[in-house]
Image (cartoon, rainbow, N blue to C red; front, side, top):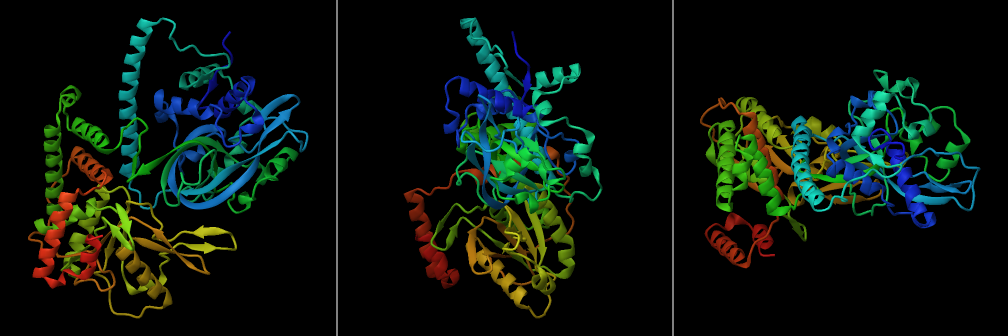
Length: 588
């Protein structure tokens, strides 16, 4: 007889505990499961990626938090703003003669009778996650659309193989085991029949009062932050300022909101009291089951092969959006793909030229700037960076072209920010992150952004004035960033350089003396009005082009290295102003 339907969406903790019970029943020693997955993560990976369940998981943000129920499966996209270290918790304990697990939650399923020798203390990592600074709205929407398209194609292919396997062997069917795991169909059946999940019953009934405080108009900031707890991962997997999508169990720490029960005190005895520094009324908790990185604002799919194959796959979707048939695209060869890339590039170049008043030279360098990326580091030199300084702006031309250009970049690059460089701003801005030892928190700064971010610095408003000590430090931080792609983090007793990959565009009247860019290009527009109406499909094609080309591996074969070296020798002989630093960097 089929057991009760456990649902990955509505009852993820039931799935976790069911898989734990099966692992123990099959002979696994609960005392040896610290830092290991006993099959729960594989179940959720299968549900999210193999069964197409990812699109059904709600996204946690400042709007949806009012309606999400605790102890359900949610998604969270954000940047790692602070790494809070590890905390200990009661991972496994005995309820009589039966082993129970407390993984992926802060509340015990059954109240233990105090400390015992059988209670296993495990460890998890804590991260403070914030909305991605400067993320444009289209980036998240595009991720969802591509996720859906990729999983639909993968699902169709798996169904085709499954039908072939079923014909070859009738016994190869997917029976739900006793107490089996079920996805969204089980959730629908449970909702229609009015049943509640076993997990929800064990955690206590979810009532309106449990999260009514989130509905207060001033209870939440406009941008929602979250305390993410990650299990069974090495320290190298999650890094500061990386952008991730987490899927996990959404919970509240009720023990810090009023009545404190004995079992909650026991659960918190093993962990650092982060809840005092992160009030639950403002900072929800997410116990991560699955996470994946987002590169340049687009998801790294587990079904993709990466490299050139990934680029071709993305280009297929671009051409599909331009109404090419999928059957036709299957027959594409490399030459036709290269031709399609050329068409997309020429369209983007024409758009940039139109935005820049038909200045074709500035448009070419702007495209190279948008494609730039730090591919590696040699000593203090960041290989691949290309900061750009467009000169020749007056206050009149800046009022026209600066907004046009920043809007265009915002529509092409997922993470963008604009900074007005004035004496007042330099004297008051907090550019570098700093450590607050009183709260043991890393206080964010303007320059704490993910790799791939674009900064447009408007220097046309800069007038004469005097910099105070803060302004001098900020000017030094910007200079260090543009020269070596490193951001200075202030730890009060010392400064620490953190590697970055930020595209920097400077708009100024003359060559900037504060920000020494890699390239200085005079801006010579011949028209002031941009008349080009851009179709949505063209924007999507250009976004994919920029993201995909930046993601391609960087390599220079020996013959090309010789060509570049000869060109640099010739350039240095003809123009001594090429500079020793460029020469030294290219010869490394």
